[in-house]
Amino acid sequence: MLTSLCKLTSNLKKFWTTRSYSKLYKHNSHNTDILDSLPLYTFNNTVYWYESPESCVDRRSQRKQHHPLLGARLWTRQKNPTWAIIIDINLPNFAYLLDHRIQGNIFFPASGFIEVALAAVGQLLLLSSTATSVAFENVQFLQPCVLNKDEPIEIHTQIQMPFRQFFIYSRRYPSTKDVSRKSGISATDILKDYTDEEELHSYSLKEWTLH
Image (cartoon, rainbow, N blue to C red; front, side, top):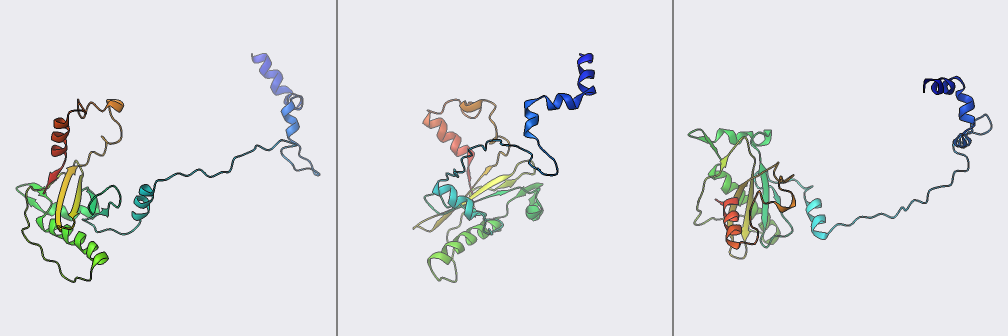
């Protein structure tokens, strides 16, 4: 092996010129072509881009500036006007929520729920009427929204039309569980049986909290 390597390095020019691919390279004062008579590859330049109307609306609508607590409106796959936001109190733009502590626990303030509802109604009024004021009646706070430094929370705000009622839901946002499933496509680590309506209903109730 060493003998062959020595022969190769000792007469590298001769080795190169005896190979057919050396003919592809021609470089002198009269010819600067690197590739000589090499047939062109027939590339297909057709642009393939498929995107559903729903995906297009979602993607383009995210570019606009959103309310810092209400978040972005979900323009597709929603029967009623719905907004969603993911709150991570470790981020600078949500750091002020750390000051709302009660007995050591961090809560999403009740005034924040009112602000979220006002922002949602305000966006709808801009589109549907010229009203300058909003009145809320029979506002109920059913469950507190506890914020955790170790886990972001996803908040959905929904306005039911034409009754003009608003509902605010939240759930823990599993940032890692949504990426890969340890049980593969079966996802049996979430639920054992996906055909049992009662089990699915129970999971749905545990997943979301109505505030």
